[in-house]
Length: 107
Image 1 (tube, rainbow, N blue to C red):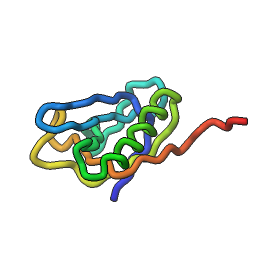
Image 2: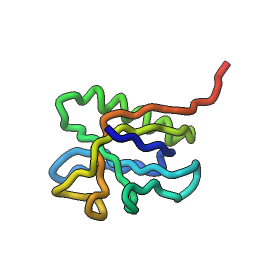
Image 3: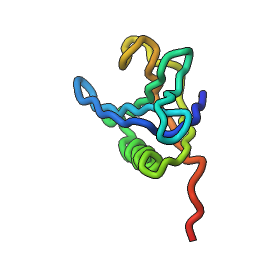
Image 4: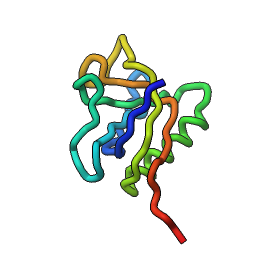
């Protein structure tokens, strides 16, 4: 499993043929410096029709929180999905874990 670190810069939903969430990471908060893998902007995806839907919905809540609060995340994924792509060939990676790395101290 590979990992990629960044800040959630966009979240998109695709419902044509399959219910999927796509999200992209940036190198810093409030920036359009998109994370690239192999020179191509990387899109990470989760299949909401998967058998373990509660797991993916829990990850989605972490992604939403990280985006709204500007928190850094570490995304676990496999290699690029072949056979289909989002915008360019080899630009989509199936997400299998999301971890928030930096959260502000709250008292």
